[in-house]
Image (cartoon, rainbow, N blue to C red; front, top):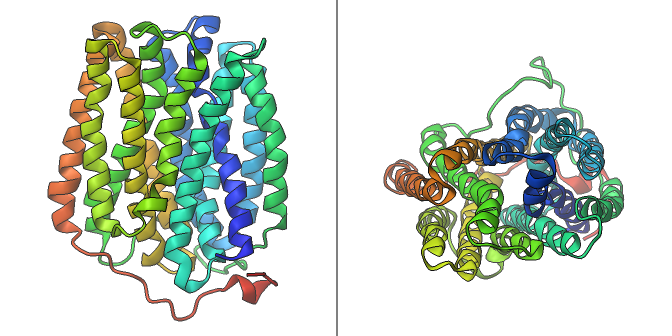
Length: 407
């Protein structure tokens, strides 16, 4: 990849740490602000209600007005969110911080991934899409990993992780500023604010039955491990060390980031099928942990699900990275991520359900639902989406044709 692809990757990695910092802090928020399980999962998922429409709109906008005009405000939003969450004095500030995070990630994630792919050479675009997926999964994993260790060893366990993250954001801003724009303003009678899902012609059925439910399942697995499982570890398994709680988030998200390093040869379509199916099966380990009272089993489950979710994301982003031209790439990748974030919404119901029937029983329902979704992807979507149809790039806007770019 080019030098600019790598600087864009640094910005993406640091940026994504911000939204997952809250994971090991959820038990602290619950205790300090007297939140129920349902309210904790609602807090966790609140940003999704902002992410989905924001991502849907701004993926297409960036294809028309430029990537950096979208990514800049996103960096400002994640900065404000970190200040609000780190210094929250009431429940309203917690929810306001999550909304700001939702705006930030909705504007940045799909667009930032497209930005990395844009800067890659034509022959490396599929690999650039995989690297982008690696960076954002690793960033999401480093967030709770760092926050758990810092919180456990700080006299201000909620504030300190955000203070460190604000320092890292300085690096992200620097990487963003030195990376050149890849999209000239695209004139169109439709206007930049037109909402349009960028699914290639002839592939809508495959996207709807294969990529969309696969991404939804990935998000469902992620969100449950990052919101309900921390409460489960404290209330059911008796974990007191926040670093261990943060380790679940690091393993589940961080290991997903390294999957492409040893699974690059796996074709995109089977990568999605193996990742979704295996992740759903591995979710059963979380429920089993309560029967044997084993924290280690939860950590194993987090690691396995993380690796397999990384495989799902690898396949999905590779398909999106090669199947459309540059002027549709941002909205297609954003549509994929939008489906993944939509998968966090059911965790709200699981949180409130856990108050009625117990956390362990709610997690058993979670596993059953994940297995059902995986079956849809494999046995329905797998038959509809039989092959990846790559876009043949003939004339594409090249970053090195816009501004000077080093290799």
